[in-house]
Length: 242
Image 1 (cartoon, rainbow, N blue to C red):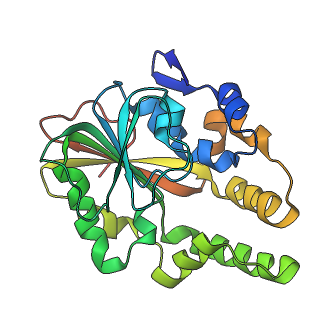
Image 2: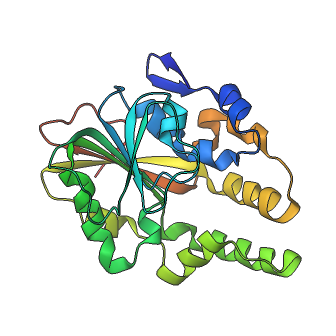
């Protein structure tokens, strides 16, 4: 499900919601920057794709892997059950490797191994998107609010708290010198907090957020998309050079 654009792709938000009417808009927002940056259709691997992943959003053949079987595979999706810390693929198997909201769920001592595995199986382009330590306070506020108002926990955010969100230094420090690092801001922190409050606490649809596009990526953001390019593969930078 995509509409070609001069800059890359633009997600077909209307079409995606026709297929997944109750989808949390944060799923679309977290992938938006990556969908726009991927310049080709074939040879893509997503690690840890969850219930709705890149294969649904691109509408293109690709390989995905996760430690749990997928409930609803996308057209053209080839699923492999595997851990991101030991990928069952040869070196340089894919043009691009994508991992969204995965790094922060790994124990700190396993994160460098995971990053290096993504680089190993890529020919030269990797997208790692995750919340960083700057977002810990916003998560703590939401966890407390959810507990007080509804007496509930968000299991993903609880795991973030237990393992600690990665720092930019931690991510960049795992990357060899022959790879270039760009950073793209993703999902304004206030927009993320508002969405989590409305979805988790109030239980109402926040679908309009999905149509905000680049507007939602201004200011301080909840996530950072680390765009990693092998030196021989690197092109013009879309963001801040590391």
